[in-house]
Amino acid sequence: MANLDLSDFVILKEVYKTRSITGSVSHVGLSQPAISVRLSRLREHFSDQLFVKTAEGMMPTPLMENLISAVNNAVELLGPNRGGFVPFTAENSVRTFRLGLSHVAQIVILPMLLSLFETRAPRLSVDSVDLNDLTAKAMAQGEIDIALGFAAELNNGFYQQRLFTEHYACIARKGHPHINGPLTTGQFLKEEHLSLVAPGTGHSLLDKQLRSQGIARNIKLRVSSFLGLEQTIVATNLLAIVPARLAHTLAQGGRIMAFETPFPTPDYEVRQYWHERYHHDPANIWLRQVMFDAFVNLPPVETTRTSPQTSRPA
Image 1: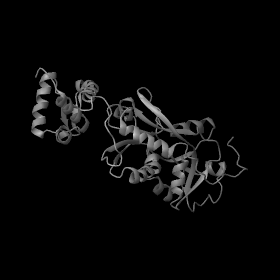
Image 2: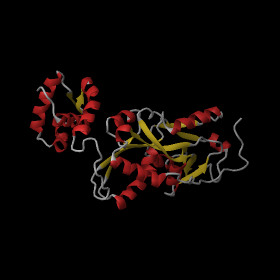
Image 3: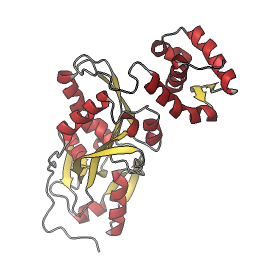
């Protein structure tokens, strides 16, 4: 197999992306047996297995990991588009956008985005994945189109755009036995708390500032996700500090009370991020513009104000 052609690169790209020969059939345009034959020849050409079958699918070898960037560039350059723009018509597109979203964005922002799709691009669909320490790698490999939230690790090789500024609020269940009005620092410190453990997110800034102010919460429960938060708060007497938009969203259900925190908490900027490989992609450009138009400079939400007589911890 002295020479490779475009279909060989497409096979490598799609098996890498889908972790499956079967899953790559619809994108490659060849049958499963035909792809298997071509893959065998590619293995001989590179003197490497390229992919190894595991319980998680066809996982790339170290050599394949090193090749994938060049393979993706070759497909873009040699494909029908030859590196230029592929026409994108949102109204008729059946594309699936893969979004990396913080848990707060999944609860608060994603429903708003889907509502916009209903009118502007009704045939589009979304795959939502959590922001985590693998997000940067997934975006570089083309597995995530856009990430939305606070992601401190997305720097080199990524573009970013500020959307809005977020602050924090405190939540408790309706009917909490010790909180009937504005929250004071004394009440806050007496109660037990739920805390989110999420390094690299905006919440890590909150923990740092609380420590700097000498505010020591009595942590009863630590969680790694805000998903299911409402049920936990409603079933207990725990308090939690959460982004204000999440607090506002939960309070609309009638089972949660939202309060301003009785001490300063940090603001943080919610941004959208994309990898440089998608910077000129028309579909990605369209989605970024939709998100910018919908969410830029969202006004802060209001919660119950704290008492003006609130004192700070010694």
